[in-house]
Image (cartoon, rainbow over all chains, first blue to last red):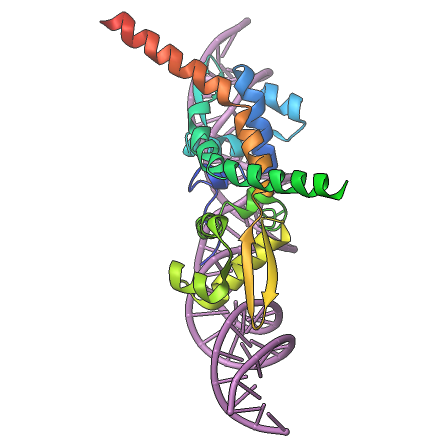
Length: 107
Length: 107
DNA sequence: TTGACATATTCCCATATGGGAATGTAATAT
DNA sequence: ATATTACATTCCCATATGGGAATATGTCAA
């Protein structure tokens, strides 16, 4: 069995650094593909393909405006990732507390 | 260029569902490999290989106890993911507000 | 209709993958 | 020393990948 498809879920989709850049970029405001090509210095087909993946998992939404396509981030789809990482919050807080205590004990 | 290695960073490592299960499991308490095999119903080599990936990116720590290896989650390594998703928090809050307003306007 | 612009898709390829099976390695027990 | 237990690694393979290049699709303008 190979690795799961990038389009299988948000976790797989955001594993790619370029796609994370795109999401950050499109969170602030709607942008066209050509806009992203200039901003991120990527080839147009690459941008389109990344957007396709992000769209398939619902991380971006698109609408047509004349001959352009305008994309924007659908932040709601990032929330499951946030929730998952959040379940570990108390653990790293415990770890930090332990480190702090150890440091204090050493003085 | 193929997909980035699963060991290239935490984002790629946690893209795999089994590895997320392992992390959740090892966050509560230290466990041996055989323990995980039983709990997650995975073949032993699979568990070992997943743990290897998680170790390479610092998501788990290991120590030997006799003939067993005990693993535990290093929650601190999940923090960057949490921070990244957090940057989108205000955006989904905006979206929810908009949905709420629309719902209220329709009544 | 024809052309230009904007984006999407297809084809190519080297590479990393996860599981299964088999094998290697390390530590204890006898 | 040998056997046993507990993990780790290696080999195999079908499959998905991201980039580059080329091509297809879609929209407007004249």
